[in-house]
Length: 296
Image (cartoon, rainbow, N blue to C red; front, side):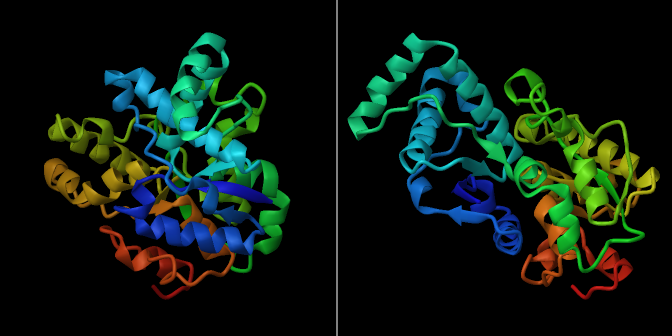
């Protein structure tokens, strides 16, 4: 299984632990990540650029799609925000031939053309649909028995479902829960798992953003979660990085570790926590590593 690897901005900057964990997990599971086709690829626009200039944002994403097409490889991302933005852009491009022509006119200046065959997919879906639950279970050497994980999807990987292939792939609706159970852990459901983490409004309304962090993490912890697991690095940034402020705001010690999806998989298949940088989180992961009998 070989993919054009689009890691996005955040995993190469603010969340390098996600990148490290992804590389290790993919190697163990037979997922070949080809970096070359995506060299020079740009940011998706993260939903922000689209609000100001949709044509520019869609052109940037079409350029990424064309680069993957040129390499004749499926496109894999590890960022839910990237997934959502790319899926929406792809839907607009494929549904309007004249719009695609306008964008391809711009891409032609770089010798690129998007033919409409790209289908960007998050690692979460690749694990479920290409690797398969049975294969993942067969790779588990350290089942996370007794570990209680709350899934946190966030916004972009669940809506709008019409552009995310949920109709064709209904298992995507509970993909995180399936993977949590596949590694031997217990799913802790809570109401906010598909709501916004607060990151998109952080710079314009930090108070409400932090309030959202407090709401989600406290609800998950009160439900019995040892940690929260997310496929989105932006959600991780907010839920982990701003949790101390949320604790102060709520006057309640939260202390809920936030794991990237590949980190959870990695713990179960025997990857050293240090390699996955579990010791670099804002909220310490020590207690969950102790619970599953691993050292940080």
